[in-house]
Image (cartoon, rainbow, N blue to C red):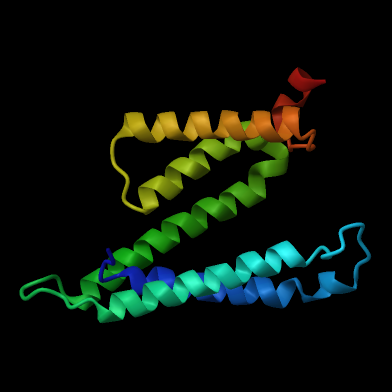
Length: 158
């Protein structure tokens, strides 16, 4: 169930969860119509990320590596490469989302994340990226009436 390099994911999950809890502390003072308040959901999700991270770290530590397996140094390099790919893709997405738009920026982000976690097969990656983007856009833009960043496609939707 657990791979040897799952501890990297676990530590990142714990760090992101802790950062989310830290940065959502200020939301508690904001008045809201919701009785739980605006910080409730992000805090619950952050704690779940921390729990998942701890489970991955403990599972990776408990897993014995078979004799003759790859060196830990190689595992760390592969894990760091995956994290870098995903972080760079997220940074590019964040920087260009408003100007280019959700519909054009999300498929490359999903594809980069899939490549970062080891998915192979261009057809599957492209199909998943495009259909996921279209589905989420339709749910949020049309069904939930959320203002999505349309970027250069703005004239097509107004």
